[in-house]
Amino acid sequence: MTALKIAMQVVLVLTSLLLMLLVLLHKGRGGGMSDMFGGGISSSAGSSGVAERNLNRITVGTALVWAAVIVGLGLMERG
Image (cartoon, rainbow, N blue to C red):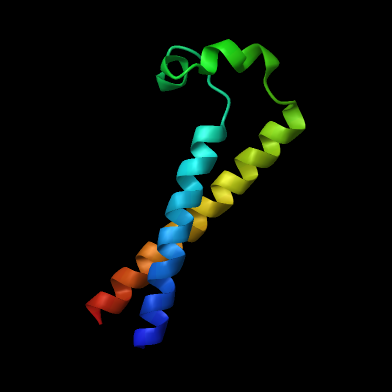
């Protein structure tokens, strides 16, 4: 049980870092934090529609894994 808990904690850390990176890779829509860090300047040179859709899919998939790991760890702690 301890090995499974440690493995899930490692997956949680990795998915957390990956999720932060993926969210920061998204194209800014203007007026937000992305403009403050220069996102508004490069938005005209942004990625194609296919790349943005794939980035969305990867981000949602990573978020689902992240949420499942959190629920799993919570259930382990409870029982």
